[in-house]
Image (cartoon, rainbow, N blue to C red; front, side, top):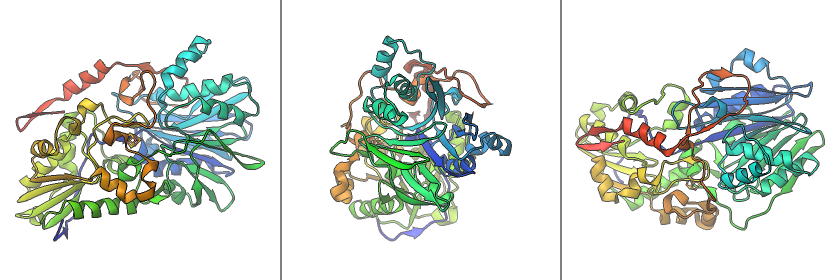
Length: 497
Ligand code: SF4
């Protein structure tokens, strides 16, 4: 790209982006633990906007839970936080796609077993969930939900090991896939990360000595905790009155951290997998500019839909409303765009429908040429590790060539970040990342049917409750297809979804 002039910031909604399912946080040893959890969940709101929850270990040794559907600010208020006293707490924000948000899926989950109670908050997705569940049911376990996270609780409950953290180790040794988890008991906080290190999890410390775990460092920054280190892939960290202990699960020789955390999910002010997200994104832009240059007058960025949603201004119930959302949030300034050659930079293309609307709006506002540059390789496959990327059939890059996508979107030129260039930029770290959704090559193959967020239907409950007692319903692909069919519409002679 060349001759770039910064444009007046435009705001746009970017529907249908891949979505992170969750963010987790854990606090140990601070009298304001649940309030710090609450603030940290605010910082992680971009990782999930449809449900939030906190579990606190009260001074009298009880685990108390407040969960609800909606944004963190909608679920919690002063009186709710007053119900969560104690020095130790864990929290969770979640995202789901299926119909209305599902109250019973909102974590942390809390369960009782013969040695006490345990709460868990999980970011990621287990690829052997079905197999594990079938084995557990064979041996008499009764499930209240169809969440893969519940499997972990059952495995802990049936373990014969003592003390508690050895139960967690035994349970985690049976898990395959992606998990960054925090557990809370009456007197302990435990943080675990899967051996591949798919999803991030960091540890920090406040000036009063309180230990903090969070999905991203932006949460540490907000509550003035100093970043200490990542929870290592395959590590179990146990925090209790005796201090911090670290154990290793089975180590895997090659890490497979999710590169999409750097492309899209994480906030730019976070350090993820030991790298600045902001610096990664700047480099992606530099590569695009040098490898796919175009003469232009104006460069604009498509704002992050996750952040837009996080501030609570935009709920996406149907395609028709999403159309208005694009217009509402993309506010082209005609005086800046009139007669100009415009480069618009986005992080990814999923269905291509939002991109086509953005191009149309820019052209209607007077842009002479619109060139799209995408700071990721084409997404051609679904994710099994905790990200909702739709099915392969719904991904435009799985169905069309770059030229066909350009034609569909209606822009004058289109270029993606090349996967080889991405790997070259990562240099010696390149083998330590997962590129499954760009290549279809998965580091851990699923066994049985793997839960994807779209595979579940709402149980009809809406509102806020103060505890979870399980009860997912498993929906069908037909349910999802019906939803899509309803949302089909004609656009410039093409069917868009
Ligand atoms: S498949 Fe894609 S989104 Fe999923 S973990 Fe791998 S890189 Fe991340």
